[in-house]
Image 1 (cartoon, rainbow, N blue to C red):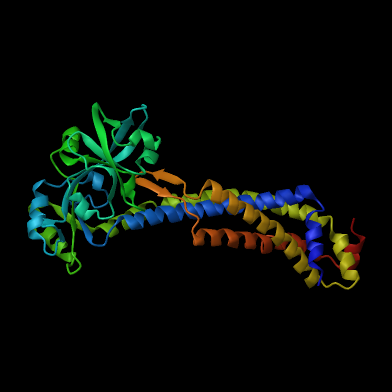
Image 2 (cartoon, helix red, strand yellow):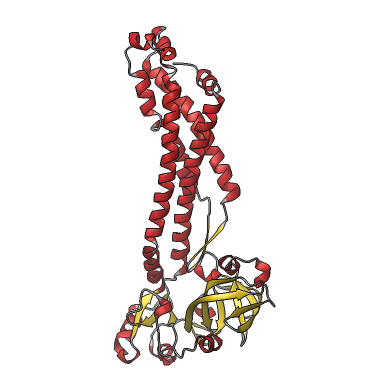
Length: 383
């Protein structure tokens, strides 16, 4: 076998080619890691947003979008007294009639962006149990509380949505009374209004949905039966985790486009790298033939070239990991119904390392095979 130092020395024979190889590998790995982090982040936030213990009562025919749903006001009280197995806290049933509305919100700096608005009463905390008030108080008339990622959704600094600041919905000015967290869910990007305020501002006399939280012994099919029996209310029941699973399927084309875009750019970088390798190895045909003539087998030369390639591509992979760690890890990315974080999870890191190894082994095969394929006499005569 050829010594390992031979592969290391060959890397630095042409510094410009080495930089191109390392840079191309880093670009490919970085793009595919980013695509993996985007897909995993969006899937994670949607899957974590729904609780299997919560059932959503929505208007019939609007099961795919809470924003389009309309539910009679009396459905909240009727559900609280008619559905079996509802969880209770401090004597209160975990039933929350809510208004969900998407509309522009303007901050004090004049920035105006779309946000998810949710009109709630205090029993909403009995249903959405991941919500924790971090600062301030629950909203009363003329007030709102904001998720700790709402400023990312609006594209403003967190100071503009701190307690005591103002936001504007149309011509109405509302005071931020508090900040809440709901780790890993889309709720963290929402702005919560007093339900009566939001009903007045949007000029509606219906709810968007009624959320029911069941205890451990309850069967969610009981809620379905309730919806079927009360035809006058025109309700459809869907488990909250199933609702967000449908939303995840809705966003699947976006995730596929992310992979395709990253793959196309990566393919361009890969083919550019292959051209560089073809040119580099073509100039070494006589050198490799000389090695064969003094006793080294083609297998040992092939292994040495793989070592050389892996050193370059894994260096690029390390560079991509460092760039990803400092520039994308923990970055919040807003989308239409919330915000998710890009995280370098073990799966994302393994994806990057795996791509780097594949680039260094399979990616180098065409130029290596072309270089080693000529017969020894012909290779020795090559210029």
